[in-house]
Amino acid sequence: MNTLERLAATIQARKDADPDSSWTAKLFSKGANKCAQKFGEEAIEACMAVAKDDRDNLIYESADVLYHLLVMLTARGVTLEEVLAELERREGTSGIAEKAARG
Image (cartoon, rainbow, N blue to C red; front, side, top):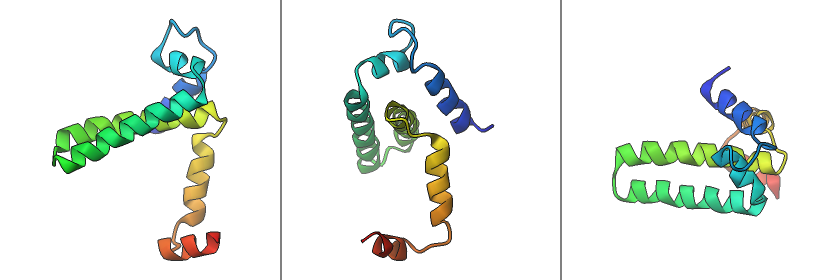
């Protein structure tokens, strides 16, 4: 199990925990829309790190993005495995071809 898989498992385990016991549980207690808002905030912070050419902060904020993405997915019942399966399905397909096939 890699780091991302362990993180996803930890997040899932905290979904129904006492909100006073963990930040993850507190996010879940506020609902999926709040989880999505936090993901968006972290994504913006990562983009700002790119704009400032701040490599160290980009690494830090990217970790926050991944964490909050997993929280948001879990809040809506989507697993990391499902997302990875979708990436695997797309593997070897041009991004241009993949986008054209959507529509």
